[in-house]
Length: 224
Length: 217
Image 1 (tube, chains in turn yellow, cyan):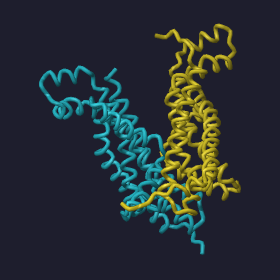
Image 2: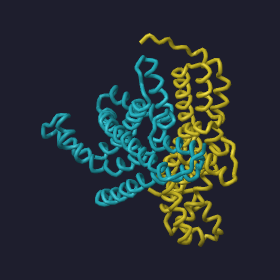
Image 3: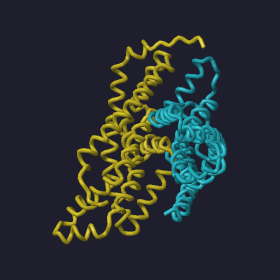
Image 4: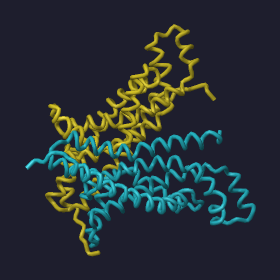
């Protein structure tokens, strides 16, 4: 092997890379936040909605979980304009990510909600809590706490799979890498650097999630 | 000239399915072979081996699959090996699958009760025999449902091979779409084909999980 590594060309465009990484972070957090809301609503619909709603949510989950993310992106980015809805690559990427993570997170949160015993809800109502308060304090918070590890690893998977949106050239980290690659032809170096950036992002995300857990969920429970 | 989507286009998509399936099969067989060693390494009593396997898993689970494919594809060229997209996709997916299967199977090996290990070694079995006749046969039972579930993930992952230029189902969809410009129809059909491949496996995985999980409790 007589290849000479040359990282100069890559490091010269570090600010461009940083911009891309920042968009990856923004897309990921945006999709997580919206996806979480979608998932909570869908999980609620699936556990206690009328039959047609449950059927519809099931169909959504199964379709998303059994088709590739890349094809979902293509459907949204290339398909929607034929229906008259024109999207920028960034927005299409965000929508695709929300739709995708929403389906996975619904199943996770549903499992959490089903782990709440009926007696808990009855006790909450008996204590005079309004239904919405019961939902907020008795159902969703303990449910999220139970499934927190599964949920956060799903979010990290989402961040990693966001690299796929480079296929529609949303300007995130992988797209930036592709652009630098086509200008400098230092493909191996650039992808090594970007892979390392993704790894750092994944580690940072999991540290952040651990911190959030300590702030929001580390209360005592007497169940033992 | 814009063609319309007809029977021939549909047949072209269908014939691309064989490449999706071939890529999935190769990645699964390769990934299972390497993954077994990763799982054994991960559960090893020798610390450096365990650390190495853990690092391997973390590296592949902490970075995007697309980057792994790019690195294999461009990395091979750097080493002076002429790598076509087909080989790069097969190798990249194999490595990725081995890390995921290794982690899944680690859990299955550790699910075999401690007493089984102790009993086997008390009977004088050394590591190869202990694994071969006592631990692995029991671990396999637990491993089947999540492994089938992983197969769904693997089939979906092969779509990324389209980005490095290997003509499987998704790339075929792009090609047909470029000629017909009916994205909703074309990618709708592509998605439907993936669904037909994956959904039965998902259902099977869920059913197996119920069957195997029930008596254990």
